[in-house]
Image (cartoon, rainbow, N blue to C red; front, top):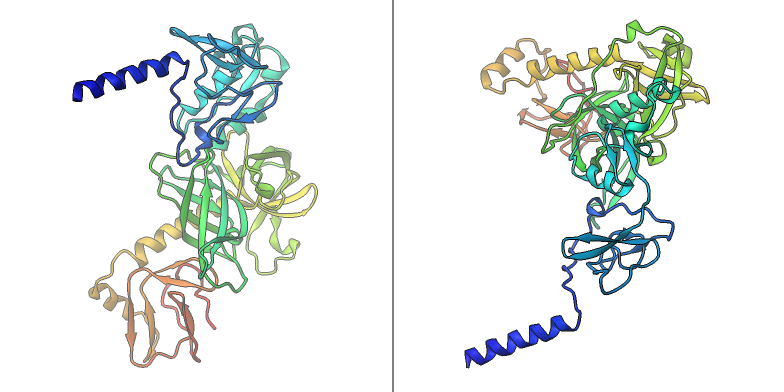
Length: 430
């Protein structure tokens, strides 16, 4: 009986193959656009049978042997072993920015997907790389493109989202830019990019999109609202590209600079300009409590550019794009001020949060003001102006008459507010 069933199955499969049917892999449950090919064709685009990837004609993306069925318009039959596959027709070689010649744009983009975090290769010109002239003005003076290629992988797009407490969906609050300064995922941006002054209900979340399209959830590391500088942290699975900090004190009026960011959520938007001055007093701009001398440049900075890097032609960050007064007049926080912020932040973490023992707390109490009651916050991680999240623990003495937002719970009382050491920015009180 079993033998008869096996013979019947074999006969059925043989008959099925004789009909010309071709095996087609099943569609993925979730479409990943990064795994799609990059077709180039004048015949237009359609979606493949899985409604995932754009292809240049019906049949592209399908395992359709062109030995039996002719390829559609815009397609060419490419032999792969004993059978042919319909592929997009691209009739010219291209020279990549890595100096290699690719058979067509399709092959260059396919190679890009295999680089896994390395800078993407872009088309320099059509034709063989060996035929290009390195003495042409385009290759001798295209220094801006060289800078952009160097810094773009370390520039990120940041979104501040609010998770609805009832329905769970995310609401967009604001967006901006930032740049990676350590290979482990420390990112610098403006404080106003990652905070909101609006009264909101729900959980705030930060999403960071890298140059390669990967998205991470970030946590706030440190905030200085007066200087408008903040650091956030992601936990990547790989080593990330990072940008070095230059010395803004060495800037000269007339120097070329490059600004890159995500204005209006358009990632990797590049503008160029020159430095007018590196010592524009914040009080001249109407920022009365400012102690920063800003860099003035005519590089265009729009909404969403905030937090992105301003770099010199050596690819060093010399400022954070922060303010725009009008077209042609923009301002950046100098890198020397960023370096000072990072140094103070490192000291703050090592001194204040290095130990949580009762002995260390007792030593700190010697420097406390003469108060008989209150709340001691051992460590906080600031997420917004309205919330303070405790990281270690809280020591409570007697009846507490303090009004703060603590761990997203509101306690409102009259109080006198004391600080024994500098925390991660001021705790918002009511």
